[in-house]
Length: 240
Image (cartoon, rainbow, N blue to C red; front, side, top):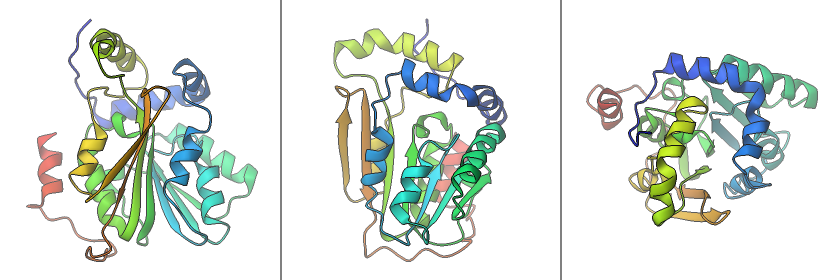
């Protein structure tokens, strides 16, 4: 087994997740996703009633209930995902729960502009599946209001000798299932845009929640901010 990683294009990722949409609860069990991990990630966003929050890679909606409870009926929850089948399931969940303040968008997150400045952004077991993750991160960070919070919750290999032993198996498994690149270290990439990054481990370090808080002195976000062909985000997309 190889220890290298080759990213898939967005069409391949969309097709894969369309096929896996109904199996997400099974993968949660196979991968020992800790009970309540999504709720703890949402808690760390420190959302208030009436806030606006975006989940990037919302999948079938496993975190939407936590987000909706956090912002209340008069807040706004936005979810964006590349998979139509994932969104079909998420929309069915919202309809069954009668969540009228949850808006779900089929799009690549790097192309999505929220309609308002955000109080929080959540990546819940999704960041490592995005081949252009740094570009998505920077775009999401721009959309945060000053003082807003961005949280990434995901899995990682344990530290020490066990990581070297598990890496080939992890890469093989992810290439054939969820397409999550185990070589990515999101907390380091978040530290490149945030002044301070906090991280909490779960399940002996196999899962983590990391958070960056946007400086209150940061420039305010502007609706539909145009992309600059010379800016860093565009250069990262081209490089990836």
